[in-house]
Image (cartoon, rainbow, N blue to C red; front, side):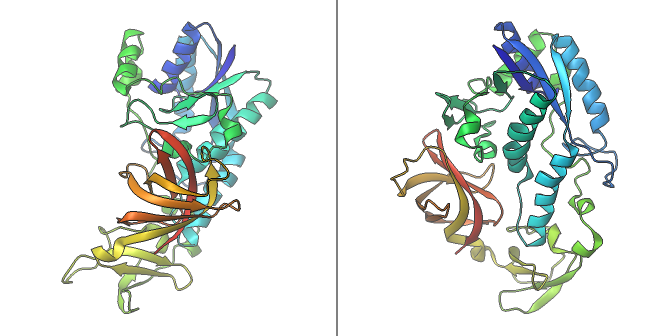
Length: 355
């Protein structure tokens, strides 16, 4: 069987390639080239998007050579700009908080990368990645054995069709076991170099925007009273408390809403952060029977957030509503809400509002 591995050159993707090769499969590493030098991002820290990519690709090629596998770099800068960068900017400009990693998985890694690799002549039967998740019967997306590394939240926007020919070889491994394997096989340098979870390499999202998108405006309270000045709504997200520059008040204030029409950041008290009901759209149903429109589920409203109990209802048009058993803090429009039944991902949607 010929398997294409989404190859970042990090320890996870390298060990996936090694495992598959040792199992006797014909393995080829495929790596996305995303950097667009028209963006003014300085050379800096680790991240998916930035000028550091030229060095990352060199290291990736060296790792592939060490593994003894074919390696193909797939140029996707134009697709990435439209599918991820433009989406990221458009969402922030309308007062929402996007999740570029989820969008990248959905459209880039499991979409354009595979299509473009085939156009370049790369032939393969299955696509494998270093994600920590499990696919059961080529259909159901399930949580990884290592709960601290589980990445089902980031994969929950994949369609059922995308899961059919995908392999997640690390889903039943602990991260520590993968690191031990890397050391045993002579890839200790990959363990030592660490990992990057950042979007852009310098961490300053404002560099992706034009000056007209960075206009300062007013901080206001829920009564509309002006409390101070903000430096542009793209710098803020629901639940944010630090760095507001608002002091001398009786109690701490948090960002509870963004108003792009008035260019205002609405601040409120901690109790005002909580919501009992969530409304979302573009529901991606992965495991709920089509005739079951209501039910109970465990819900995650952001990566790393604890699961919350809720009742759900959804429609064929993609609308989803949730009523939490207990009010939840910082429900954020633009983020993903993911539904679970035990270790199975039921589906996900994009948060629109909370009440």
